[in-house]
Length: 302
Image (cartoon, rainbow, N blue to C red; front, side, top):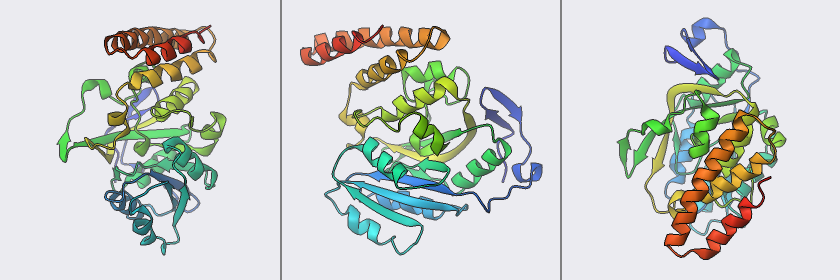
């Protein structure tokens, strides 16, 4: 197994020889907790679960967090519970942030991976990320490229979705470039930044990743390690068209924690740009309550 000849590390791109030829990697003591939050996705959940169970790297514990599903989710999961690596937790419906946080708090490994219940890992995902971590121990957060599937058809991502490290913080202000299903990060980072914000209906990943990007160099593997599925009706991005409202809310929170500097200036510019567009949209569609919510948020800026 090899990485691409050009592998991106934090803010650097270097030539990488075949991984297992460059270092003798010992996986004996490495353990990962995998967290799948799910709500009413019994039809696609088996695909996600199977993609974890069938990983070539087997030092993991899988936590499936049922966020109050009313479909056949429980009976679907029961088929996998004879596998001692698989754990099932149920809660009343409180949202994806709460579900992920419940999984984090009920697991214990140093490293955590997330998998959305409508996505799928490729078989070498964990092996490649763990090998990358062994060779590059300076990174506490690692993500990768992904294959996009829309309405059953593979599509190419636009240039603005480039996940490489160049100006990643600045580019991540526009939209969430890091997919949760690609992420492997250390538990300590989640504790440090107070978990996923459960008050966010959407963009909770955008919110946490931005806080991490302020201070962390992030490891990036340019190989596709997951399949990301979209186009279905129950996607949160479909249910919440004004995603930028939540992004502005996240940026305003972060802005107040930063001292003067380039990142603070970049935040301010993006807040102004998105807020102007949102105001125009709320006015056009006579969404005056939303407009007032945004105005109240903007009053929080120093």
